[in-house]
Image 1 (tube, rainbow, N blue to C red):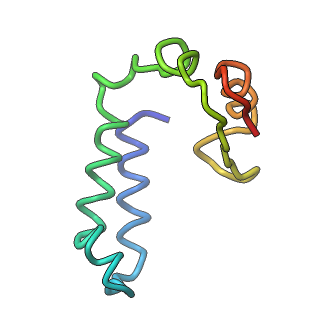
Image 2 (spheres, rainbow, N blue to C red):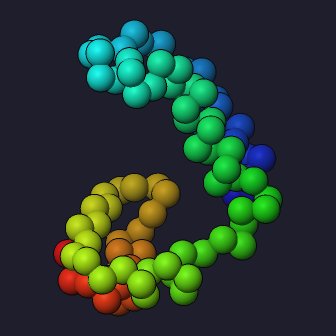
Length: 95
């Protein structure tokens, strides 16, 4: 799937979701504008200049502390194999 297709898919999904007011002062303080927050994150990941970024060699081998990594079996953005690779690349214990 191309980045423009992913972006269109994400925007379509967001348009179908009803807008909801923040339910707590904490969530309001952290994210007064959920769409702006989401696109601030998503646009970075979908940017062509970010395509070659890879944490596996540059960052993971330098992690010495214990790592708790959580991934859902049905997550469409990640796989369990990614967790296995992460565990094999960090120096700290991974679970």
